[in-house]
Length: 451
Image 1 (cartoon, helix red, strand yellow):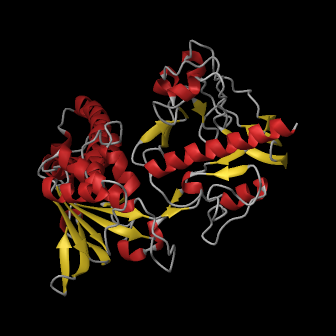
Image 2 (cartoon, rainbow, N blue to C red):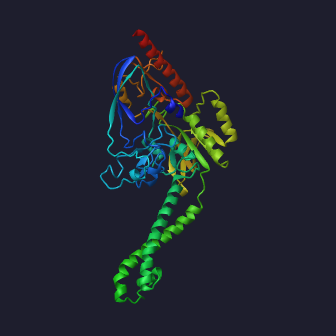
Image 3 (cartoon, rainbow, N blue to C red):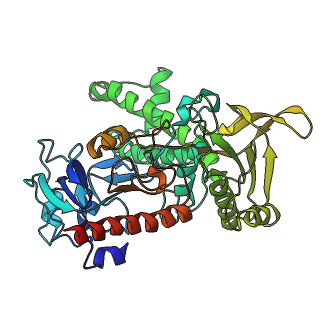
């Protein structure tokens, strides 16, 4: 990405959207909307000082909602261009409230709350569509209870868990356990605040709060006029403190027993090869699950994984060997089975119900964590993009191409690559991108010769 950002012949227009295109191959006029960052990208150094002081936390979609970012943020650390943007839906200033701390902290004076959108017209010879894909929403398959069970994740969520820059810093802590830790930390803050309030009552009246509460409950406390004024409020605070202290004791026991997930289940074809959703194979899911299982084992050699699938489609060069090596060296077991249902077991552990095809018996088995290999779906606004570009879609919702020229769309001079074409993995996407660039170059050269 850094090479692209520095290349003299490449102009990056990040955070921009194509709104209209007219003309023909070799001579297109494209209207591009440059969205408002409220940060001057030419001035911003990407130091992150603004995000450090921003008081507004926002759920971080890059980490699949398992961490928070700030209202001023960069999508991820290595992004090009290295700049920040302000989320107008959460920024206090842009919501009409008082703040502006980021502007005060920014030494480059890059914050601009008055910045407006711009529309730029470009003359281009060819267009390459590389819109990527969306991930199938497993909520549509209620039998897997995604979002109902904390410890059922998608493969993309688990990918962030395995990353050193992710919400768990590369350690495989279960979401349910992370909730316990967060609850404990929040409770400790509340207790610390409440302790200060109780200390004022104790100093004023010379009684311990818990002893006061017991005496008040058993009617063994003599109430003076001064004490009677504070009794009701003090008792309420003391009751809250006792309830929190009891809950904290329970949480401390549970949190001290937390360990990383050791037993993982990967469920393949979630939304793929399913006539209810997408009848096609998503192509990369099998190898993605195997890769994640191998990395999980590298993080902790006690980790063992079971991959449930109708079959494992390791079709690329060296993929079959990689699959076999995972089974031998990374404690991966491949089960030919379709999981019927997931239920909740003890300690928030998911319980899988499936048929073991080897024994032809129904099995109920508990796992620490379940990872769903979700289907590769067309991006949600693909129909709108197709309409803007004037190109057709296929029956699955991807961009339609010529069978004889698999990168050529229904309109001359517009090409596709990667998951805009169909589900595919990174190596094939890169190869297609090179091919699409070559086709675009041919179109430009042809138009120059004609003129």
